Length: 57
View 1 (cartoon, rainbow, N blue to C red):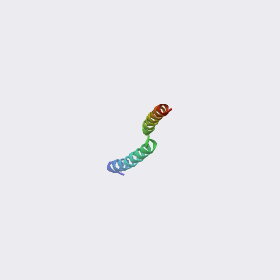
View 2 (cartoon, rainbow, N blue to C red; view 1 turned 60 degrees about the vertical axis):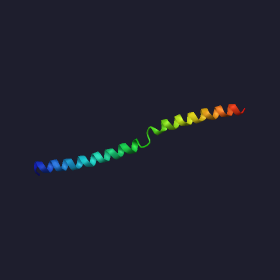
View 3 (tube, one colour; view 1 turned 45 degrees about the horizontal axis):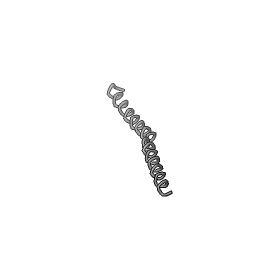
View 4 (cartoon, rainbow, N blue to C red; view 1 turned 90 degrees about the horizontal axis):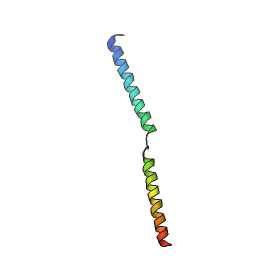
């Protein structure tokens, strides 16, 4: 095996490994951050609902 073959082989495996790591990272962080905005929207909706109920009573 020559020096060129080692370089090509390592480049091939590093490319496969980096693609696999990108997929894993994407799966872990798929909807991260959306939970915060959903909680904020839910709190805002609850506050508005409370105000409307108080006005009606």
